[in-house]
Length: 469
Image (cartoon, rainbow, N blue to C red; front, top):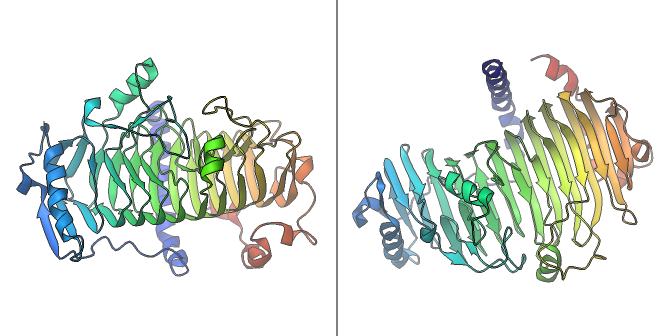
């Protein structure tokens, strides 16, 4: 049975890849995201081997990476530089990037994270979180790290960055860690970031984490971790703006993409939202998380999120907003469309009971504002539950709009809604009572983005497209 299941998954993936190859040209013409200039020529280039690195998978090369980047820093005001990582297995601890740098991995190059926690230094917690996400105090620094940078490119000819996270997962599950696990790549307070054409494996914690960043492109990457690996999120834009994520395949143990903006009173005080986030042509699955999640740490606010052409298969949840009393902040102006689901437990979920807090000083009266959420053009087969949409008593989630959704649902109770207000049209199975009022003719202006885009896309027949497979 397991072999048959794997074959079904493979066939589904191949079919959707073929579909995405067909549609790519139609959306790129109107893309608001700049093409990743991964082959941009830097006037200066060195190979990591010039600094004594040995690609045998055993020799620790942290000093070689640090020394190479220190040397290349002298060219940052001369057009920048490229650090070339050739074929080989390059074991290293955490190292810093610099501005105006391209880190380039050759096709058979693999950067390996050290299994020694001492090679991942402990740094201060993020100010918008107040402590480590998992434990009070500091956190281990990511394998590839940078802060206060401009013009940074991490790319290659589909080389690999492998965090070798299994040791960290074991330490986490045994509760033997003293500090929060490290991410695989984290860039802080940086602008002009491109991450493209690479494979990321086995992150100890979240995989790609741009935090307090602007003008970020993540394009054409594959992110993989075992489906039972804890909290191995794929891409987590965090208190960042003008982020574009395109053409990615992600299969991990948690959320494929999670948009965040700080935790409770610390996020409220730091007050840096995530805004202007574009997600296109995302394929993936997970066992314990969501395809696209917002939150649960969203206290600085999340807005202006546009996601389209998504395919999630054999996953826990497709689209989630996670929040709780004490979070404060807001989630508003979210527009998600053209979603295909196969074998997903819950298609749409609003979870308002996501209650881990950083400490006892959060304000339980800080209620999140959730409003103007539009989800349209969704098809799905073998879905257990269409929607679990739970607002907060005394804090209704407003202007939730569902349009042109066709799901084959196995549950006898496809929708479960409370403290939700909104509208719907062309939804099957029929939606819950708080959303039954029709979008037409009076409420399209109450639904984010629909007043401009409804007429141009309303005639799409997503159901027939799915059956044509």
